[in-house]
Amino acid sequence: MTETAAPLNAPLNAPRRGRKSALSRGQILDAAARMLRRQGYGNTTLRKIAEVAGIQAGSIYYHFASKDEILDAVLERGVRAVYEGVRDALAALPDNVGHLQRIETAVAAHLQALLSHGDYTSASIRTYGEVPEAFQQKSQPLREAYVVLWQDLLAAAQADGAIRSDLDPHILRPLLLGSLNWTVEWYDPAQRPVADIAAQAVDMLFHGVLPKD
Image (cartoon, rainbow, N blue to C red; front, side, top):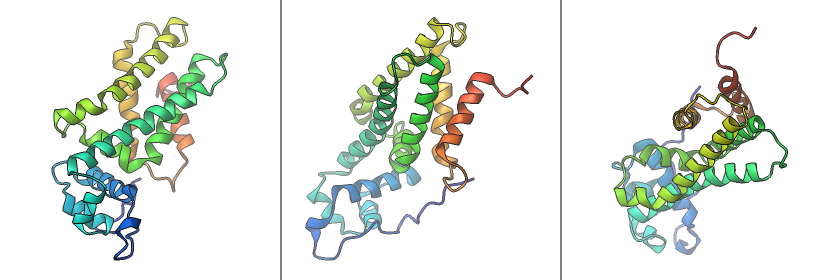
């Protein structure tokens, strides 16, 4: 299953000529996220972003001073969408919910946020290792907060005996999130809902892939 991507040069709801004030910041970010997702940091230029957005390159400067400022906004939005989606989903649970249900909720919320903001989240994942260190540092506090959220979630489950205490959460967390993050490359919403993917991910996490007795 593969996600059908629009052509890179397909304009994103281009505004009428002469109506520069109607051009939204969001249109530029959407175009940049699409480019970053498909072509990476090095191959994304202001000219190409403008082409995808269906605008003149100079119009970008009404909203952003540089390509790097656009990149910063795209990366921040991608990371924040997932972090806040999972954080808020967990906060909405009753206090007496068990650890396994909390993990299941976090997995589902991670996937929902990841796949509903596909270009942004994929761009954030793909380009993080390509961008200058200064940009990595800007989004680092959010990324670290998300790591802590999951480390605490797994540690609490281990302390209560809900999951095996001999597993290293510093290995379990990146293995789990890495597999979830890869769904942005193959998920097709026409084939099955996000909830089905989340349920199967949780089932494999808790029960493995061996036949059930």
